[in-house]
Image 1: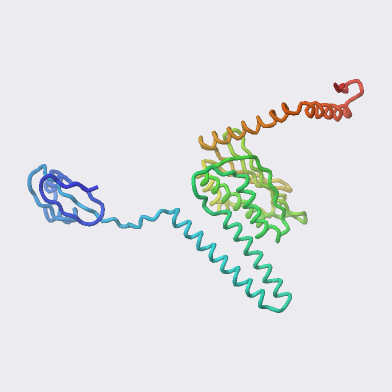
Image 2: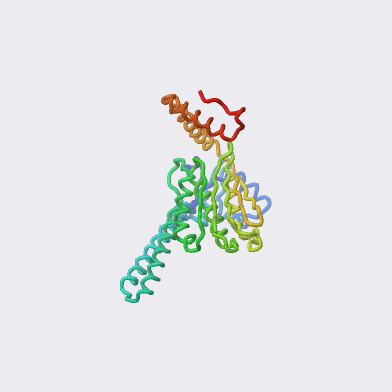
Length: 314
């Protein structure tokens, strides 16, 4: 902010305004000659009373002022438009061509581009500050990956997820890591003639989130270096977590672990409390059903025990 000096003169150069007391300049002039002070200070001071102030303005070298999030959304918008334009061009070519094989090949390209468009939309930066259900977000992302890549490689993608609420940006970061790790498994896994399978497990243990990417590929074709997963590990550190790897004869697993924020802890505790209370209300409303289920469980268990230890149903 600028404010008029009570005494003396002020000199302006467009940019950021600083107030420099004359006494400070006087002390500097005792060591450096006046002409040198003028060059160092980017202006020539006019001496007056010791309590006088001069207003100095220093130019800002990068006055763009554009938030990085705005640039990221603009880049995402341009890529989306570019993919849509490519889909239109290939679709038009598929309509014009007469050869059956060429028409089928172009249709496959259109389907492939639609899959990549789905992945790109799923990985868009979320807007707002409302918590996001991470399981829904990850499953939607997986649908795009199936359509774009995995189905064409005959790799099955399965999910085992718990209810988990995350802040929008952190959920987006989780999606970026999952996408990178799933695609990494699809590129490098050696299934040795087996049907390729990749499983994503998302669980919460107290205040800790665990996301496991597990596939049934063997280790010899998977000499994973830190460089290949560097971006995923950097994102994991941004979440306050880490990535660990495990190998076996016929499996490979990569685990992302990170802690919840206090806001996420409170929200997930509320969700868990509601999920616990709902079955209790259902049992209280239908006691006969609960008794029937208990009797059936006792009968099933009794079939595995000796006759002397079988429980007697009420």
